[in-house]
Length: 70
Image (cartoon, rainbow, N blue to C red; front, side, top):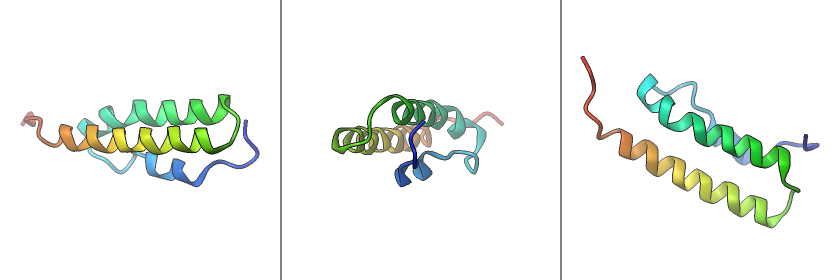
């Protein structure tokens, strides 16, 4: 476990999202935490987390266009 968690991890939190968006966002949070736990800190980890965050944001935006069940 790293000594200090990278601040970017706060952007992977998903508890505030509606359930249909939580389902999309949660796997990204899991992967982000796994990367932080298994890779050494440094610029490549930072890039990986930043690009994962971009991907998560795009996936959540795409899920906004899914039809909602009533």
